[in-house]
Amino acid sequence: SSDGSFGGGQQLYMSSEDWSSFTNITSVTSNDFAYAPWVYITGDGEDLNLDNVSEGNLGRLYLSGRYADIDLTNAVIKATNNNDEAINVDAQFTSLTLDDQGSKVWINSDLTYSLVGGSGDDYIYQRGSGVLNATIDGGAGDDTFDVRDMGLADLSQTTLTNIETVYFGDSTLILTPTQFSEWTLDGQGKIFTIADGVITGSSGNDNFSGDI
Image (cartoon, rainbow, N blue to C red):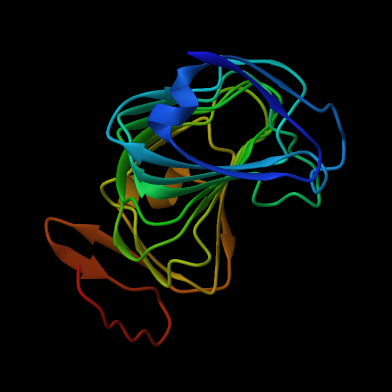
């Protein structure tokens, strides 16, 4: 175990084992996400948290590899209007817990996970394509789940709680009838509903293609 000191303008690459070896990390304090250090961590299947950061903040956090439970409740990552990729998760993981300041997080590849937001206004971007089997609780605040980059987003196996808006852009959505009636949807793409294995289109001229 050791202490760590992160300076401004640094990009730091390490394994999750290296990260966990720091017992106390001090970083610069900056509202400029481009100046605060960017940290890239490759996971080995274990849990991860930011509890060892005792001072200052991080500009961005990039996670790759594999994780069990990711705990980001220690609010050291600045989520500003220009910092859309403050937290970038290009990894397989079991669960993710966010802080209370209002997080912006990208989920790049995993389609099976649970996520719990904090009391701030969380913005959750989902990439990948196909069937999403996720349980997401946005917590308090005005939270958005953004699937615009999925192309084909089958959310029929996904549970959303305390998510105020699902933004889908030009993506095609597949929802259950209950999801369609209860969720607040924002986008221009087509919406299909599925019940008992049967997909139903809209009242317009629909064309569905893809694997579900």
